[in-house]
Length: 383
Ligand code: COA
Image (tube, rainbow, N blue to C red; front, side, top):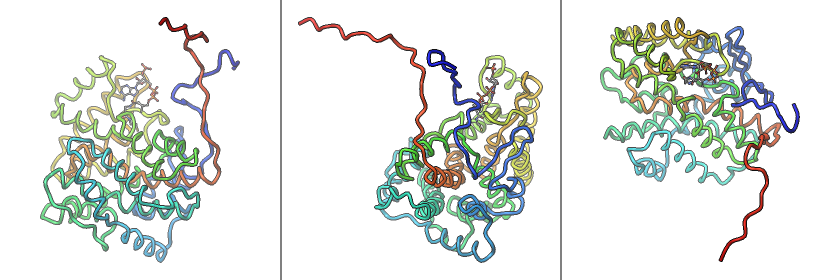
């Protein structure tokens, strides 16, 4: 590498920018661990609340600690009147990620200590955001449907409370169905953390300038919104609905490949032999589809997966968004809310990274190779 001809890794492909003790992705063995625990085991044996505690504190909570932690989270779920007014005044035509980003900015503007670098304070902020984000999303879902706001429960668990705030407790509501609640909880665990992905890196870049937690989260929401990142779970479901028929799925997929169009929900920057989170989410999706009599989506899922594998030279496989998109659809969520739900989970990973970045900070400021005009003089103005 010379100054004249520097090596450029576009998209920071393969570049290691820092250390982290929060999660480890090993693409070769197809494994992902949070603080040393395999994500599949966390999804099987833990709740999302336990995983949030783990990401922030480095260890799983004991029974007593978990009760205290959950009680603190439940007490922070409510929104103040001004925030409710702000959310309900936003245009219904905007994407719900815009509402969420704006709400986070409002909460930050109301925190006089937003600039603190104290890890304990940031962990408290993290808990408050984890508690309030579901309420913000549920309010936004209901006001767009013309339904009235359901106040958060101070008793229900995290996943159950969210389903209840969105769907109420009428017959057929997933909030009344233990299997639905557990499948949703699993999806949150799988979405919680994933090392230096684009949105987490955005949060770390903002944090590295010694800016505040809320600004870092607003940046992360902006990064997650894009269809190459979190927005893919929405795109997956739009595609399924567009195809709408298992018999047409193979042809549709082959056409996309022929036209060199991306098939959303496939491929990954790090995993090249399959995403370690997919088997757990795919199982949950299949169970949901069976229980809700919507197995058509599973048929389409299987055909698309096989078509991609068989017809791409690098055997492209699904990522987490591929089973998560239709799973959220079966639960009854409006498609534009799939990415905000991702935020509900990833807020835990983002804030764990904000603490880590703060505790060992160095301004993130890469270099670029200039390829524009050589230096030249501004021509004199003719009067
Ligand atoms: N559909 C069709 N082709 C794909 C593809 C997809 N989903 N993902 C990758 N490819 C192709 C690329 O176009 C590239 O083809 P080329 O060599 O002819 O140019 C080849 O596979 C290698 O891709 P790669 O460079 O390894 O991908 P990347 O690391 O740059 O990109 C993603 C990773 C996630 C951005 C990419 O796979 C993608 O856009 N996927 C769809 C969006 C998505 O699901 N995002 C969620 C990620 S969790």
